[in-house]
Image 1 (cartoon, one colour):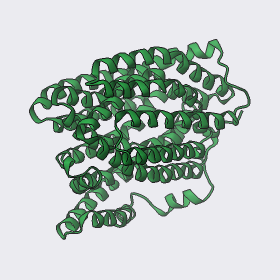
Image 2 (cartoon, one colour):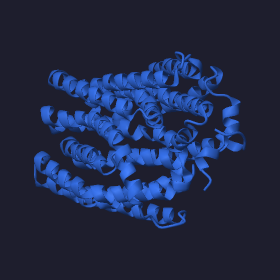
Image 3 (cartoon, helix red, strand yellow):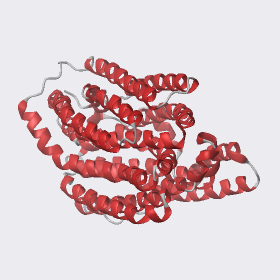
Length: 482
């Protein structure tokens, strides 16, 4: 079988990334409106409970995948003749893991629920977890470097969820209707995507014992590291909820939701390029380095612009989306915007660590990060509230990014990186921040800030050489391998 990741051209990868970013951006725009309706329906206290439910289930639900996806992509991309066996093993592992995951999730809800409504909402979302097993078949699209179907399903989910939220908003519903709507929406998306994925497979998924055992052994350190990553990324929400209460958790959850939504950018880039990285190692080191450099440049272009906008426009953005009652949350947004820069590069580092076989070292980094995050949050939240949680998110991500980069450099015996296009993107972000400060000072308002960012940031990226004409040509033409 021919590996699409191994022979994917730079142009094919670029078009796939552009498709994902465009579709995810449209879904993000819809998501912002939907989130605003959810917040305005529930209020700060109930939204704090909703955010805590989702954070808790995201933490526990990771046990169902436990790093298997990234390992399966790595192995299937490197050995496409065994793709079917690896995909089948992932599906089987998810179905095996769903029982303990459901039990642990239910126990967590019993411990966290402040009232009956919160408990019922959590249990409804838990009931939909088994549909995630067939959802593993979406990996087939990643291995083909063709993510049109996942983007179609993402849009289907967004539209269904948006319609449901609008109806609940008009009827002044609560946590339970939102939970029912989200569970049904996710189930429909998983079923549709799986049926379409099966059409691409030559055989129905049926795992061999050999591949299932190999997957479990290889995924164990990756899964533990990923579990720790999810833990230090989500535990701050739980600690704010436990230390400062539901209202503070609602304020923090509102801006943290924006950080979560921004993950679509590094996810889109790595969804396409992770199989390319895996297919390049170890036989084509030059291609691996080239793909990694291109990935880092794309991360820089996106994240530095986002940070500049968040630093200047935080207050009007929060007021527009969540209402004046959430204005207190605005100071946390620039801090989380800075964390997003390191999170973006962390996506690349995490994939490279798996590809290079450094899972155990990644596990140690993630364990230290969890300790840093928990100790820091325990110290700062009682003093400065959820702003302390935002600072600890930034500090933790700086450590994880730096430690991961150091490991990768040692493994590949690389010289200290030169600023290059990444440095130019940083300069473009700084310049954009200056432009936005001037626009704000002139009374441009949020509309003026958005227009200025859309006009000046691309111009600054081109003017400073962070991107070039060749990058645009790659999207519309055919050519060399990525």
